[in-house]
Amino acid sequence: MFGLSKQQPSVKLERHADDAAVCKQKLLQAIQNVRSGKLSYLDDAELGCAELSREWNAMLDAICSDKRSAVLGVNNLLSEVTKMDFIKSMIENVRKQSQTMNSIAA
Image (cartoon, rainbow, N blue to C red; front, side, top):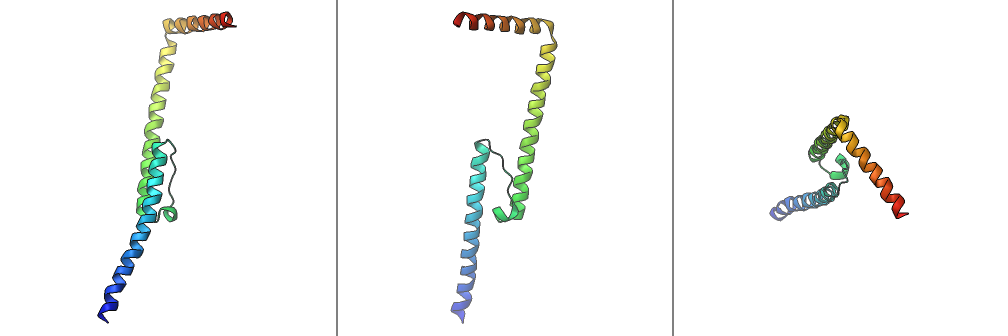
């Protein structure tokens, strides 16, 4: 009687540890994907933990928002720079020199 009650919690802990290992493996794969530039949302069923998948997806949303605002900032900056006359003439001179170099090389 006492032996059975001690074994049941350990079986539950082992099962929980296996679930956590699967969750850990999926999470590690997702982290590696983010590091390589591949952002992917995680599903509750895929990760095995609804709270963790919600937080993960919220983190990805924040990363995308930050990157989007950075790209828009660079785009606005380039737009302002290209409006300046001396920059326009400098870009035109570079284009002409590039065409000249290409024709000489050909």
